[in-house]
Every structure is written in C-alpha cells, then in structure tokens.
Figure 1: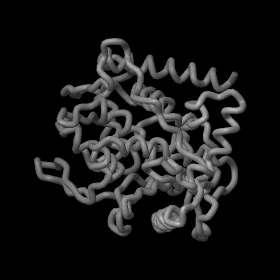
Figure 2: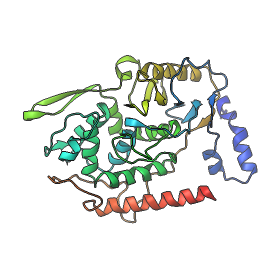
Figure 3: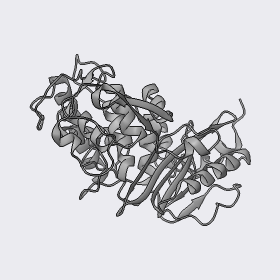
Figure 4: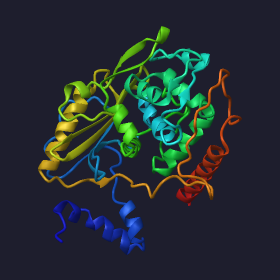
Length: 356
C-alpha cells in the first residue's frame, strides 16, 4: 500500500523519536505540535487576513492533522467554549431521559440564561441542548447541581481534560464564566471538541438550529442556536461560541464538505468573529485540497476514562428529583466518586511524569 505524501512528510519526526529510543506508540503521540508564533502547512494557500484571534488552530476533524496554528498553547480565558468540556464530561454520566431539577442558585446565575425555572422537572436532553445551543449558564449549573455540585463536576472535568491530553486546560465552573485559574488553549479546545464530536448525542445537540424547552405555564419556550455558522456556512455541523468582556470572543467551529471535516478553534478575538472562523474553514478545505503537509497532529486519547474494577465505563448517573441544592460530593453516587478519585490520581501521576 502506498504511503500518502502528507504522511511521508511526518516520517522525519518519527524516525528522530525512534533513534532516541522512543517506542513506536510514543513516536506516534509525539508528532510535532506547533508552538509559539504562526505555523502553516507547506503547500497551503496563504492564510486569510486580517485575523483578530490571539490564538487559533485549524485541523482535520477526522484525522487530527493540524494544518495551521497561532500560539496554540497560549492559555487564555475560554468563556462558554468551556461548556463543551462540561458536555463531554456529563453526557456519558447523566441519562438523557432522566429529570434535571434546577435550584434557585442555578436559575439566578449571571450571564446568558435560557430561562430555566426553579424546581421544575426538565428532561436532561433538553437541558444539554439548551446549554449548548443558547449557552445557558443556568442549564450548565443545573446539570452540575444534579451531578454533585459545581466543584465535584469541575473535578470531573479536569480529570477528563487530563485523560484526553488537554493538559493546559483547567475548569473552575461548568458554565465558562470568567474565574481565576479557568483557562484553556486553542490546541486543548481542539482536543476537547474532537472528543465531544465522537458522542452522537453531542453532535445532535450542537447541530440543532431551533428547538423548544419547557417554559412558564407548561408552554414550550422556543430556543435558537447562537452558532452563526449553522445559519451562514455551507456544511456547518456546529460546535460552540463564547464571549465575555475579558475573554473576548471564543469559538469552536466545524464543517464537512466532500467527505472531509475541518475544525477551527479561536481564542480572544473581536466580538463578531464567526466570519473569520468561516474564512479559516474555507482555508482548511483549500489546504487539504492542495495536498498541504500537516504541521502536526492532535493527541489521540488511548481509550475511555479509567474506572474502578467492576464499574461500568463510563458510569451513568440517573438524576434524581430534589428541591434543595446539592453541595460538594455528598449526593454523588459511589461510581462517580470513584471516577473522580481515579481521574485525579491519574492526573497527578501524569503531571509528575512530565516534570521528571
């Protein structure tokens, strides 16, 4: 079988790693990843200009091959793109047909809200959809409350980030609201988005343009996605936008054309950034059509998150009806506590290994 020229271009890095004693598996994981500055695939057309993001990355969603990057490991505020990690963490753990019951603290959160009502029972899939379509901070908090509380879920999110190789991401809350220490990178957001898009429910949620959720007096409340690409870009398949004054505009966008899928992540851009994301998607498709040589590859997670012996992987939490806020780990099922402990231990070991 012939080896494609793009793959051959990556062989020097693999051979170098092997000459230094690395195993074939390690060499595959250690393919070059763009660092500081702007890096562009050889043979690709010029990048669109001007581009406002402080940091961005363009990659093939399916293969993980990186086509262009600017300061891809620069840690910045992620705003609501953090909700993608929230969804990646909680979709496998919360039965989508179970009931989510928001508390007063959930519905009173600052920032963007979908309009959830206190002590009303919502199907979990509606709350996930509202969180991802309309960036509802109330939806993100309600999911976290029904899964052990914000701190417990932030711990699960950080363990999940470590598992998939997003080592420069740290979650403090599930909504993405600015908080000290809550940071991510364009590279990490690409890892998180790529892993989330492997979940069929997630793809359905982020690809939905219009839907409804239970409103006052039992009447349906219409909701519309905030992802402008879904309405304006041919082949768009979603993912997530975000914005705060400090973070600027953040965006994860993806599209499929002619059997190929391109993923774009941007951080700290001007408010109306979706046209720039569209231009980077166009550029990504053009680069692949030109046979451009990738500049690296996204890390490929080795498998599902580790769990204790005898536990399902991943363990699902059936959200139970409750009218009082849940704090800390007190209401978490044993399976989720074990997941948290296991993920945290793994994260510590990985950090120690990297420091040696």
